[in-house]
Image (cartoon, rainbow, N blue to C red; front, side, top):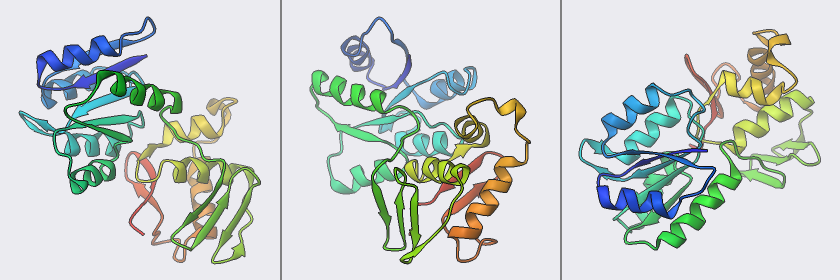
Length: 231
């Protein structure tokens, strides 16, 4: 497991590394956004399994950097460190794509527990219980039962799996590659390159009021797709 810690307080950064120490974990410590970007650019897309980001950094905001990570298709969990404990700051951090936050000063034991929980969840979340969105949809992924405005929507297994990935990671951009790998786990090399586009088009036809102008399943050009949270 490779974890990137972005914190400009060098002593705190090292302390976090020590608190999270584990034989199966490796750490990359960065003290500004520019060095973090350079490190990530030089690494494989799935190299980091977790990002720990400070909110206020010398060359920018951890919130903006988190947004950039999500827009670029990185789905690994993000934990935000912030000295701001107002509700607005917390909401802003979570809306940027962060999965959790810890307010300074914090207990390193608590931080480790929160991070362990994120790592157990993994990069792509899954949902097995009933889910409602703004009174429009009801999704039961366990029973493969789907409704829109109280009317049953019939989905194929592929469409249901695609919907589950998008909705469970709502607000995050999922790359075409990651979606294909998760949907067709037996080997994407045998799947037509247009299969994902076709599945997206069929899913939109069943869920969107205007499939050509989708409200929920957005295309992030050149990257992939995301289920929007602006409802």
